[in-house]
Length: 121
Length: 107
Image (tube, rainbow over all chains, first blue to last red; front, side, top):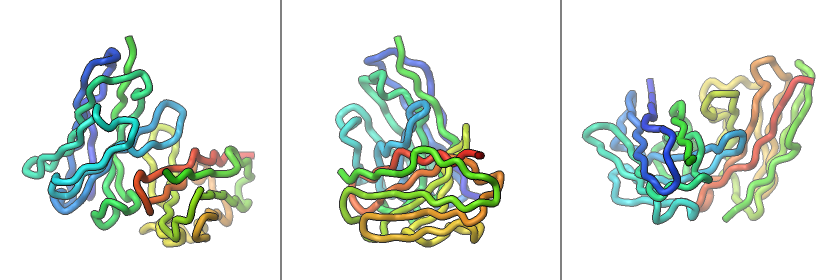
């Protein structure tokens, strides 16, 4: 069955960096674009970034562009989110999510369980 | 950026009753709308896409309607497992945006 498992969440100080991972299984990872979506504590969902199936195209929310980098290793079925210059407002549960049918602009039919990033001094 | 506005913020419903949730887009998104359900401590779950197509395995008591800017999620007879937060999402244009959610609680 389709599984997405995030890891790497931690408590970090403002200005520091962190890398999240998302391990995929149960489907042909290299055929799908994959998204990162985050949710601040007690708040709604915010789309963060997406990467094409082959890694050549990436898109970012304005709130993270220039600080976050999405990447993937199709040989390892793994997605990454490199987060630099972290701010308190980046505190959230970060989910990786697969779009239905594999295209960028599709609803998200499978989600990981999320990993918590807390930015605090 | 397209703003998605959900109403009401909280909906108090008795088990067995009908629940109607609304979602409005700040500009037309055709039928590029999805609904998600989220329970405490869990990831969102896709319920409806294309405004009205049920995800695989979703009970028929859930239905979606609308197009353009106004959309509705209806749960015809609420079961105990349906009490949760529901989000709408537009995926017509970048960035994809979500509504702020409707909390369906037990009355």
